[in-house]
Length: 287
Image (tube, rainbow, N blue to C red):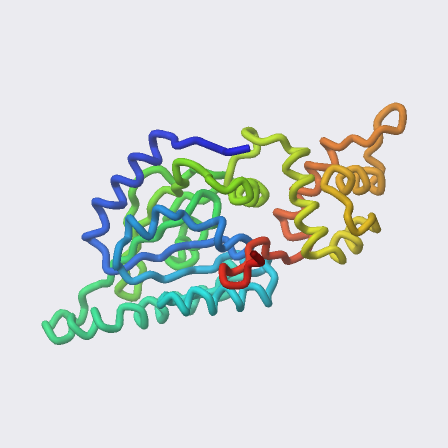
Protein backbone atom coordinates (compact mmCIF):
# COMPACT_ATOMS: atom_id res chain seq x y z
CA UNK A 1 0.00 0.00 0.00
CA UNK A 2 1.33 3.39 -0.99
CA UNK A 3 -0.66 6.50 -0.18
CA UNK A 4 -0.10 8.80 -3.16
CA UNK A 5 -1.74 12.19 -3.34
CA UNK A 6 -0.69 15.78 -3.78
CA UNK A 7 -3.68 18.16 -3.86
CA UNK A 8 -3.30 21.37 -5.83
CA UNK A 9 -3.39 23.51 -2.70
CA UNK A 10 -0.22 21.76 -1.48
CA UNK A 11 1.67 22.64 -4.65
CA UNK A 12 0.51 26.22 -4.14
CA UNK A 13 1.55 26.12 -0.46
CA UNK A 14 5.06 24.94 -1.29
CA UNK A 15 5.47 27.78 -3.78
CA UNK A 16 4.16 30.29 -1.23
CA UNK A 17 6.57 29.00 1.43
CA UNK A 18 9.53 29.26 -0.93
CA UNK A 19 8.58 32.84 -1.83
CA UNK A 20 8.03 33.82 1.82
CA UNK A 21 11.29 32.37 3.06
CA UNK A 22 13.31 35.48 2.26
CA UNK A 23 11.01 37.51 4.55
CA UNK A 24 11.69 35.41 7.67
CA UNK A 25 14.61 35.00 10.07
CA UNK A 26 14.01 31.36 10.90
CA UNK A 27 11.63 28.42 10.66
CA UNK A 28 9.63 26.78 13.44
CA UNK A 29 8.78 23.21 12.52
CA UNK A 30 5.95 21.61 14.53
CA UNK A 31 6.21 17.83 14.90
CA UNK A 32 3.95 15.29 16.55
CA UNK A 33 5.98 13.90 19.48
CA UNK A 34 4.22 10.54 18.99
CA UNK A 35 5.73 10.22 15.48
CA UNK A 36 8.62 12.73 15.22
CA UNK A 37 10.11 11.16 12.07
CA UNK A 38 6.86 10.31 10.28
CA UNK A 39 5.43 13.80 10.92
CA UNK A 40 8.41 15.56 9.32
CA UNK A 41 7.93 16.76 5.77
CA UNK A 42 11.15 15.69 4.00
CA UNK A 43 10.65 18.54 1.51
CA UNK A 44 10.92 21.12 4.29
CA UNK A 45 14.71 20.93 4.65
CA UNK A 46 15.01 21.59 0.91
CA UNK A 47 12.51 24.46 1.11
CA UNK A 48 14.11 26.06 4.20
CA UNK A 49 17.75 25.66 3.21
CA UNK A 50 20.13 27.10 5.81
CA UNK A 51 17.54 29.07 7.80
CA UNK A 52 17.83 28.49 11.57
CA UNK A 53 15.36 25.81 12.68
CA UNK A 54 13.35 25.44 15.87
CA UNK A 55 11.84 21.99 16.33
CA UNK A 56 8.69 21.93 18.46
CA UNK A 57 7.84 18.46 19.73
CA UNK A 58 4.11 18.92 20.29
CA UNK A 59 1.65 16.63 22.09
CA UNK A 60 4.33 15.43 24.51
CA UNK A 61 1.45 14.63 26.90
CA UNK A 62 0.55 11.71 24.60
CA UNK A 63 4.12 10.58 23.85
CA UNK A 64 6.48 8.25 25.73
CA UNK A 65 8.51 10.61 28.01
CA UNK A 66 11.74 8.60 27.65
CA UNK A 67 11.44 8.66 23.85
CA UNK A 68 10.71 12.41 23.85
CA UNK A 69 14.07 12.92 25.61
CA UNK A 70 15.85 10.75 23.06
CA UNK A 71 14.26 12.60 20.13
CA UNK A 72 15.10 15.99 21.66
CA UNK A 73 18.74 14.90 22.00
CA UNK A 74 18.72 13.68 18.39
CA UNK A 75 17.50 17.02 16.96
CA UNK A 76 19.88 19.03 19.15
CA UNK A 77 22.74 16.92 17.78
CA UNK A 78 21.64 18.10 14.30
CA UNK A 79 22.23 21.71 15.41
CA UNK A 80 18.54 22.54 15.92
CA UNK A 81 16.86 24.26 18.85
CA UNK A 82 14.21 22.05 20.51
CA UNK A 83 11.08 22.92 22.48
CA UNK A 84 8.72 20.37 24.06
CA UNK A 85 5.08 21.43 24.30
CA UNK A 86 1.60 20.30 25.21
CA UNK A 87 -0.85 22.89 23.96
CA UNK A 88 -3.77 21.61 26.05
CA UNK A 89 -2.01 22.28 29.37
CA UNK A 90 0.20 25.06 27.90
CA UNK A 91 3.29 23.12 28.98
CA UNK A 92 6.37 24.56 27.25
CA UNK A 93 4.50 27.51 25.70
CA UNK A 94 6.28 30.07 27.93
CA UNK A 95 9.61 28.78 26.66
CA UNK A 96 8.87 29.60 23.02
CA UNK A 97 9.99 33.25 22.86
CA UNK A 98 13.22 32.56 24.84
CA UNK A 99 13.96 29.61 22.52
CA UNK A 100 13.48 31.83 19.45
CA UNK A 101 15.75 34.52 20.90
CA UNK A 102 18.42 31.93 21.68
CA UNK A 103 18.20 30.49 18.18
CA UNK A 104 18.41 33.97 16.58
CA UNK A 105 20.89 35.50 19.06
CA UNK A 106 23.37 36.35 16.29
CA UNK A 107 20.70 38.15 14.23
CA UNK A 108 19.56 40.10 17.31
CA UNK A 109 23.17 41.13 17.95
CA UNK A 110 23.49 42.40 14.38
CA UNK A 111 20.21 44.36 14.73
CA UNK A 112 21.54 46.02 17.90
CA UNK A 113 24.80 46.96 16.16
CA UNK A 114 22.80 48.61 13.37
CA UNK A 115 20.65 50.50 15.87
CA UNK A 116 17.62 48.34 15.06
CA UNK A 117 17.15 46.84 18.54
CA UNK A 118 13.34 47.09 18.34
CA UNK A 119 13.05 45.37 14.98
CA UNK A 120 10.73 42.34 15.33
CA UNK A 121 11.87 38.85 14.51
CA UNK A 122 9.92 36.97 11.85
CA UNK A 123 9.41 33.23 11.99
CA UNK A 124 7.70 30.89 9.56
CA UNK A 125 5.66 28.19 11.32
CA UNK A 126 5.39 24.98 9.32
CA UNK A 127 4.15 21.45 9.80
CA UNK A 128 2.08 18.72 8.25
CA UNK A 129 -1.72 18.74 8.70
CA UNK A 130 -3.16 18.05 12.14
CA UNK A 131 0.01 18.35 14.25
CA UNK A 132 -1.63 21.09 16.34
CA UNK A 133 0.06 23.99 14.55
CA UNK A 134 -2.85 26.44 14.68
CA UNK A 135 -3.58 25.64 18.34
CA UNK A 136 0.11 26.18 19.12
CA UNK A 137 0.08 29.60 17.42
CA UNK A 138 -3.09 30.59 19.27
CA UNK A 139 -1.44 29.70 22.59
CA UNK A 140 1.69 31.69 21.72
CA UNK A 141 -0.29 34.73 20.57
CA UNK A 142 -2.77 34.43 23.46
CA UNK A 143 -5.81 34.71 21.24
CA UNK A 144 -7.65 32.91 18.46
CA UNK A 145 -5.54 34.17 15.58
CA UNK A 146 -5.22 31.04 13.49
CA UNK A 147 -8.19 28.85 12.64
CA UNK A 148 -7.81 25.60 14.59
CA UNK A 149 -9.80 22.46 13.97
CA UNK A 150 -9.05 18.82 14.73
CA UNK A 151 -8.97 17.65 11.15
CA UNK A 152 -6.32 17.93 8.44
CA UNK A 153 -6.21 20.73 5.91
CA UNK A 154 -8.06 23.57 7.67
CA UNK A 155 -5.48 26.39 7.41
CA UNK A 156 -5.43 27.47 3.76
CA UNK A 157 -3.97 30.94 3.23
CA UNK A 158 -0.87 32.76 4.47
CA UNK A 159 -1.43 34.47 7.83
CA UNK A 160 0.86 36.82 9.79
CA UNK A 161 0.27 36.77 13.54
CA UNK A 162 1.78 39.34 15.90
CA UNK A 163 3.22 38.08 19.18
CA UNK A 164 3.55 40.83 21.78
CA UNK A 165 7.27 40.37 22.46
CA UNK A 166 8.64 41.69 19.17
CA UNK A 167 7.87 38.56 17.20
CA UNK A 168 5.84 37.97 14.04
CA UNK A 169 4.74 34.47 13.08
CA UNK A 170 3.88 33.47 9.54
CA UNK A 171 1.34 30.64 9.71
CA UNK A 172 1.37 28.35 6.69
CA UNK A 173 -1.09 25.64 5.65
CA UNK A 174 -0.22 22.09 6.65
CA UNK A 175 1.61 20.43 3.80
CA UNK A 176 2.28 16.77 3.09
CA UNK A 177 4.58 15.56 0.34
CA UNK A 178 3.92 13.98 -3.07
CA UNK A 179 4.43 10.31 -2.21
CA UNK A 180 5.04 8.22 0.88
CA UNK A 181 7.83 5.86 -0.21
CA UNK A 182 7.71 4.07 3.14
CA UNK A 183 4.40 2.29 3.83
CA UNK A 184 4.98 2.58 7.59
CA UNK A 185 5.25 6.39 7.39
CA UNK A 186 1.84 6.54 5.69
CA UNK A 187 0.35 4.19 8.26
CA UNK A 188 1.72 6.13 11.25
CA UNK A 189 0.41 9.39 9.86
CA UNK A 190 -2.97 7.72 9.51
CA UNK A 191 -2.86 6.36 13.07
CA UNK A 192 -2.60 9.91 14.44
CA UNK A 193 -5.20 11.36 12.05
CA UNK A 194 -2.80 13.39 9.88
CA UNK A 195 -4.18 11.52 6.86
CA UNK A 196 -7.97 11.56 6.57
CA UNK A 197 -9.64 8.35 7.70
CA UNK A 198 -11.83 8.17 4.61
CA UNK A 199 -8.87 7.17 2.40
CA UNK A 200 -7.98 4.22 4.65
CA UNK A 201 -9.68 1.00 5.72
CA UNK A 202 -10.21 1.48 9.48
CA UNK A 203 -9.88 -2.21 10.37
CA UNK A 204 -6.56 -2.50 8.52
CA UNK A 205 -5.42 0.72 10.19
CA UNK A 206 -6.43 -0.35 13.69
CA UNK A 207 -4.93 -3.83 13.23
CA UNK A 208 -1.63 -2.25 12.17
CA UNK A 209 -1.63 0.05 15.20
CA UNK A 210 -2.39 -2.84 17.57
CA UNK A 211 0.46 -4.90 16.05
CA UNK A 212 2.91 -2.06 16.62
CA UNK A 213 1.71 -1.42 20.18
CA UNK A 214 1.80 -5.14 20.99
CA UNK A 215 5.42 -5.18 19.82
CA UNK A 216 6.50 -1.99 21.67
CA UNK A 217 4.05 -1.51 24.57
CA UNK A 218 2.32 -4.86 25.27
CA UNK A 219 1.48 -4.06 28.89
CA UNK A 220 -0.59 -1.05 27.85
CA UNK A 221 -2.87 -3.30 25.76
CA UNK A 222 -3.16 -5.81 28.61
CA UNK A 223 -4.07 -3.05 31.06
CA UNK A 224 -6.56 -1.20 28.85
CA UNK A 225 -8.34 -4.07 27.13
CA UNK A 226 -7.77 -6.93 29.62
CA UNK A 227 -6.41 -9.14 26.84
CA UNK A 228 -3.43 -11.48 27.01
CA UNK A 229 -2.85 -12.82 23.51
CA UNK A 230 0.09 -14.95 22.37
CA UNK A 231 3.46 -13.24 22.04
CA UNK A 232 3.35 -13.56 18.24
CA UNK A 233 -0.26 -12.34 17.92
CA UNK A 234 -0.97 -10.35 14.76
CA UNK A 235 -3.06 -7.23 14.26
CA UNK A 236 -6.39 -8.66 13.13
CA UNK A 237 -6.33 -11.28 15.89
CA UNK A 238 -5.61 -8.51 18.42
CA UNK A 239 -8.50 -6.46 17.02
CA UNK A 240 -10.86 -9.43 17.41
CA UNK A 241 -9.62 -10.02 20.98
CA UNK A 242 -10.27 -6.37 21.89
CA UNK A 243 -13.74 -6.45 20.31
CA UNK A 244 -14.66 -9.68 22.09
CA UNK A 245 -13.51 -8.33 25.48
CA UNK A 246 -15.53 -5.16 24.94
CA UNK A 247 -18.60 -7.17 23.98
CA UNK A 248 -18.75 -5.85 20.40
CA UNK A 249 -20.59 -8.89 19.03
CA UNK A 250 -23.07 -9.27 16.21
CA UNK A 251 -25.44 -12.15 15.38
CA UNK A 252 -23.78 -15.55 15.49
CA UNK A 253 -21.22 -14.37 18.04
CA UNK A 254 -19.01 -12.74 15.43
CA UNK A 255 -16.92 -9.76 16.53
CA UNK A 256 -17.90 -6.36 15.13
CA UNK A 257 -14.32 -5.52 14.13
CA UNK A 258 -15.29 -2.21 12.52
CA UNK A 259 -16.69 -0.95 15.83
CA UNK A 260 -13.63 -2.26 17.68
CA UNK A 261 -11.37 -0.50 15.16
CA UNK A 262 -13.10 2.84 15.70
CA UNK A 263 -12.78 2.51 19.49
CA UNK A 264 -9.07 1.60 19.35
CA UNK A 265 -8.23 4.54 17.07
CA UNK A 266 -10.29 6.99 19.15
CA UNK A 267 -8.68 5.81 22.40
CA UNK A 268 -5.19 5.99 20.90
CA UNK A 269 -5.71 9.48 19.47
CA UNK A 270 -7.29 10.84 22.66
CA UNK A 271 -4.51 9.45 24.85
CA UNK A 272 -6.84 7.12 26.78
CA UNK A 273 -4.79 4.11 25.68
CA UNK A 274 -1.51 5.48 27.01
CA UNK A 275 1.58 7.51 26.08
CA UNK A 276 3.41 6.05 23.10
CA UNK A 277 6.09 7.09 20.62
CA UNK A 278 5.95 5.01 17.45
CA UNK A 279 9.15 6.32 15.79
CA UNK A 280 12.69 5.59 16.96
CA UNK A 281 15.59 8.05 16.33
CA UNK A 282 17.57 6.93 13.23
CA UNK A 283 20.78 5.91 15.00
CA UNK A 284 18.75 3.64 17.30
CA UNK A 285 16.89 1.77 14.58
CA UNK A 286 17.61 -1.92 14.23
CA UNK A 287 19.11 -3.03 10.89
